[in-house]
Length: 205
Length: 205
DNA sequence: GAAAATCGAGACGACCAGTATCGGAACCTC
DNA sequence: GAGGTTCCGATACTGGTCGTCTCGATTTTC
Image (tube, rainbow over all chains, first blue to last red; front, side, top):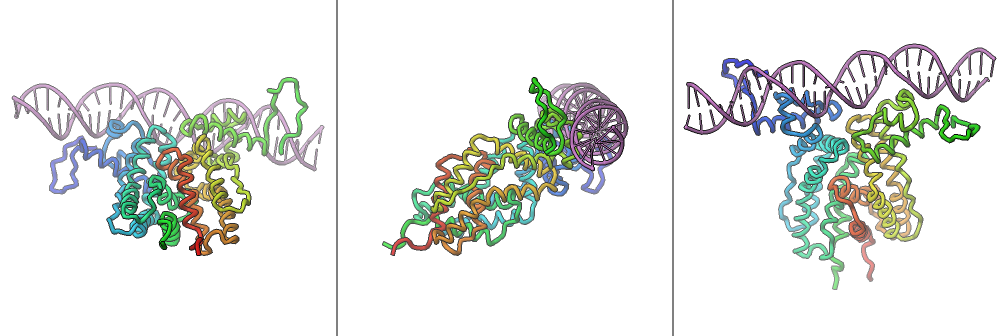
């Protein structure tokens, strides 16, 4: 492909050789898309190359192996869930969980996550990248919790780092381990228990 | 069982041909062991066969493919965490989480889980088996919660099915997604928040 | 002791990962 | 725009593994 210099046509579809960042982005996008609608099983470097309009060697020049590519491609799905400062911890984490819920419903990100986990199992050296991706995902919750603590909305002795797992864990566990699609009821139940759990000790007195 | 007691020769290495359930068990055990100390990457059917003292064809006669075998082998790690009826919900779920914690510390079950997830990503048809395995793991928590509700130790409107994810999710998320080894502090923090969250409305008065 | 069920061994085809090489295309500098 | 440098495309090649298949051997069953 692309060797013959076809006289540049009016059409924009006439693609020159892709290079640098453009090629990188095209590869990541192609990887992600293939995972989503073909499944990790059928993901081959050759298919990625074809879909990205790139040679296989170009891929191997950028990533050490297939696993690293897959983990890296997952960040396309990583639109960060910013939490606005509403002033209510309950509403803020509910908002966050609702965002995550819609995430699990159309299962693009589920597939991307699954593929990443598979890649991680196949190549443990991708662990750092994988963990960092998760950390970025949960950061807004930490910030919301710190704001809430500053406002006195939650107890001062609440372990904020533990909140990461408490808030993100239930949906993840339900979807990815129990293999049950989470729903609104689950979100509300979790939010309720957590908020009661972190509330200051006494309203009276 | 396939094998009757064999007239034990002097040499213990003298093994007859394995058949039926004996062969099945040996294969599952070999699969599990290989995953634990070689990693899913290096898991090959050939290695499993060799370690189990069995032919490759014997494996393919029992499982459709490698993925199904891996998911099935995970149940070896599934020693069920029975929760005794102590009479204190807090102590009971703490006991459960401590059991899970020790689980995550020596990472046998982590590797088994990872391998299962990888297999799931590679072959979606294993999903039902995977979900059932998780469900079995969390059942003791459901039972403990029901006892607690009957005792009036937790609110009547607590959604018990949501508790599955709230209790099991944090450790799983921390270990498998954040890639941080959970510790005692996390367990205590989670237990504390959950127990406050499900406690009846007023202790005083 | 014969028939039936099961297993071992190995050959086989297909697929795919990852490496290596080299000519050509794109970019850059003067 | 000539010349040099960097990056890319294409392709061949090796090695490993999955999953299938066949057939002789072993074990169980009756």
